Image (tube, rainbow, N blue to C red; front, top):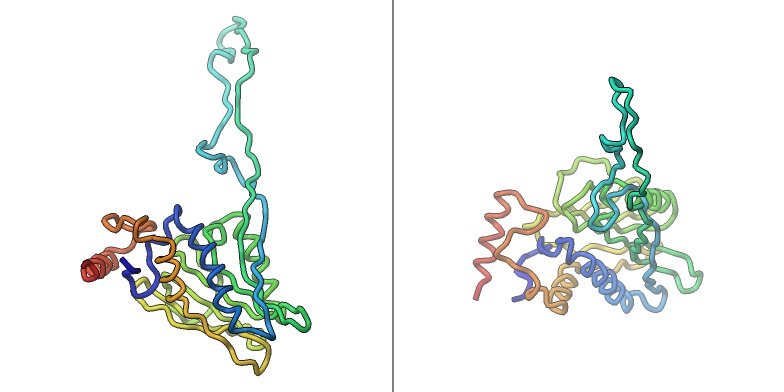
Amino acid sequence: MTNPFPGMNPYLEHPSLWAGIHHRLITALANDLGPKLRPKYIVAIEERVYEVNEDMTLLIGVPDISVQSTPSALQSPASNLAVAVKTQPTEVLLPLPETLTEAYLEIHAVETEEVVTIIEVLSPKNKQVGIGRLQYETKRLKILGSATHFVEIDLLRQGKSMEMVGDFEQSHYRIVVSHSETRPKALLYSLSVRDKIPEFPVPLEADEPEPTIDLKSLLDEIYDRGSYDLRIDYSRPPIPALSESDMVWMNETLTARKP
């Protein structure tokens, strides 16, 4: 089965699949743009690495831990009897830093080596409260305050969307194209799970023709090459869940695509 949806496949957002999708999409974007930008520009895959040590919930498979005194180790205020103190140590777990790596794209001018454009594909950590979002927001503001163009692709329904101001509707997915010379204004493509993903431009230096990205075609190619039709159980609802009306639409779409 080919990708059965006209736009983003909501099943690809599943936590067990998204890391692979993100990696493949970054590579596919680089491979798609590389030939279009020659010979003046090159596309580089860069990595952002940071350690997370926010709280005990980062311990794999271990819930929050608290150390409490047992009743036998306490002396009742109403009694003068001595109580034996527990002297044997208790084994506990301490939080360890988790190293996270996120890939993104930089478009460099060959002649000057200047970073002309940065392209980001958001990950769950970018949209969750914590150090991952804080570091991403810090970098995002730094880019938006520079002369570097910026493209941000958000294909995740979970988490809190990135900040922006304007008269726009809330949507499942967002693509933002920010030309440095027109900031703070930017182009926003708001998409629901039912929408076809439009092609969008990649800003370059002034008066340069802007190549476009056909994100739907790249996602379809990733779906086919990664054999995601064999990995997805379409008899179950996607994670994160969809609204009731979107579930009805999704089931009708899947039924219509069955051979």
